[in-house]
Image 1 (cartoon, one colour):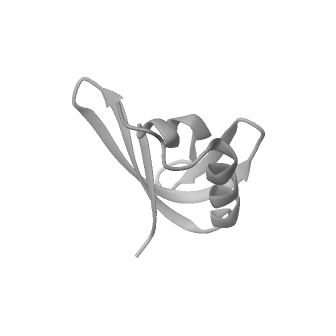
Image 2 (cartoon, one colour; image 1 turned 90 degrees about the horizontal axis):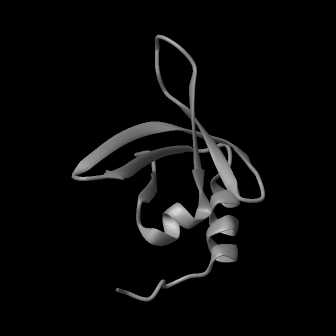
Length: 80
């Protein structure tokens, strides 16, 4: 088990700084199931943040907790 390099407040501040920007996400659902998403961080709340996904057919949203980032289940990077 590795030690987290940052705490929950640092993660919240980094996500807040990315609000409104395009991001690419990699979500680990367990049992070798990894999904890739692209979207815009739409809103941030006390425990979670919401990403509006880029999808031409319909509007979809994905919510993730800040602890998911700390655990490594969710990885976020700016769109290129």
